Length: 389
Image (cartoon, rainbow, N blue to C red; front, side, top):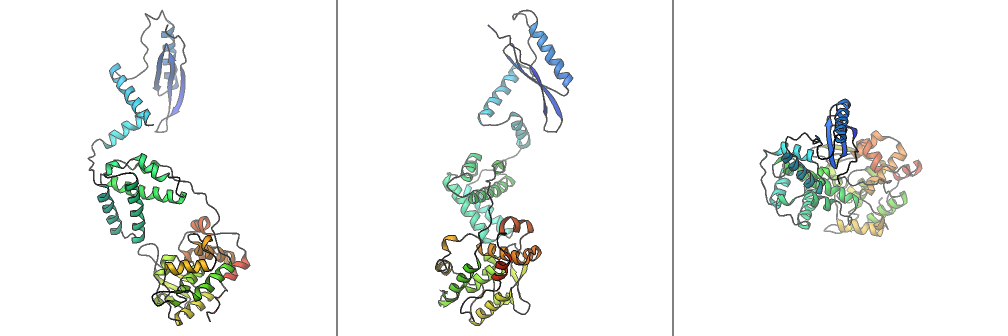
């Protein structure tokens, strides 16, 4: 026996354009009814008419209810089948139609994934991106291709990208970096007509909880510089080879890669600045002020014939370990230490912005540990490593 239950109601909703429409939705005589109207009056008129029709005569003589705008039942069934297919994948019929209309005439060219990756990295080099940045990106994307068996660009899917980004075995920061590399590559592939859309932008950005930056105390910095004075490095195994690097990073706020590019031509003892070095941003040159104790250290290093840009990973690791800091070390810990102590001492963000090459917002969010007290801040810029004079 057919059900006589009637559950029709008018539901207001907002369109994509921002206007409000009214939908008649529910069940009547075992029939699903859903139809949209531009005004409430039209919607209520349709609903009341449908109810009246349902209540007239017996089931054999009732009129067919108008519950769709499709011209024939065949078109309606086709739309319903498409809707069910999309529902299995969490899709929308409306979004699918818009997507089809936007891309129906695009001609995509499939390409071996490694070839597409090589073209992408070549394009980045032509734009002037740093080689280190390109190398890291290339390593991440090659890992993605290997891990998810991606031979051609057509194998690159939203599901595989999502799985790679959300890998719980890596840190949130790594997840965020993976998403960014995949996003940039997908954007390039779309532009070159190898991919229909950049679906990586639909993947949620991993949420990184920010905490106060890790910093060294004045005593720990003193111990690190003391260790660096005697630690040997380079082909000639000269003592103190890494002292300029550690001193510049922790007492000037320069980035590690910037410091590695320094020569004595970049050091002006007369003006008290490190100047003319290549900054992180391609084609940008900036200068950094030196505190008095940094000038004294660098003058002694120059007299010893040390290079301000020398860096050795082995010497770096040995010095940290001998100073008892190996287990505490974080990325940018020397810049965090400089920024936090300089802020505690001077309370001058403009000074920090100029010296560090970051905006105020980035400094506040990522570099300043405001638990450092003023006296400790000042003390950092007075220390000298033992045996330097």
